[in-house]
Length: 410
Image 1: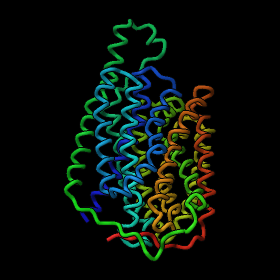
Image 2: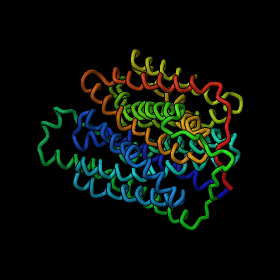
Image 3: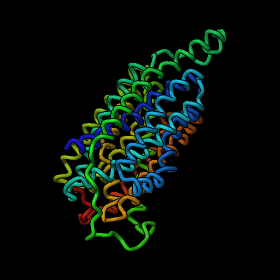
């Protein structure tokens, strides 16, 4: 059980790292004087690593095992966190993006290992519920990250373009340097904590995975598995939607409802608390409602909630996005489990493909950022609305699919 708890802690770690991005986007937008489109590359730097390294991570773990992959992931995570210190000292946006990319390389190894690993630690029939439960701690981290980030990183002080232009260069430089330096201590602490987890894990024996000999998986190549490929597509669009909704939330609340950044960070923390609650509630509901039906209902509800956020005004629009966070809660783990079911001994390779789809988080935010710069941040939310329709289609295709046996562990 200690090993299971340790693996579950990894879900918390990468959830915390990724959900600091909605704090970093408005913060570095100020410190590095960026447009909405430029600030969206914070997400791109974080999520492109999943596309580039998911398959190499899977191959690495085939040779060195899940534990080796997890340890390498934690090492990369800590290294990237420590790089924030010199990046802030130089106030270099490119340096920040590089540090985020290194962190994301580590997260790719962690997710490629932990997502399939937790599904095989127990009864195969409960794999989706078990993954949703572990992902609930990812949701807990998603709540704490913007809350703590809002307290320790965001200053609550913003300059309009006119104010920045009127300020003497030395004074402006001092202000920008002070803003950039706010990330140094938090990321040093994060890096140290990650190294501590790595040390504990190094001395812990993890259960070995025994691939099922009764179910070797499909005889045809993985790229001919229609459900897997559709799952990869659904995950691509879902992660794009999730990142867009969260990353632009603070700026949306400011533009549409006039909420200041520190208060908006609290709204986001509340929304992500709903995301966390949704994970636990969704896990419980799956005892009575098939996962695919729940996914279909949630994705369709989110489509309409995002449209409400686009076409209404004031605080009501913000509350609609808070609701979206709740109904996104089960989507990633449910799409993941439905995508890899029935792959048998090919589960690791199939998992790598689904993890690659997280690159959607790198693709859609810049598109949304450009729409925001060209029109308005409110209208730009049609991007995640369309993404939820793809998830809805995947869910419909999986309604009625029989349960199948996954790989087992001891």
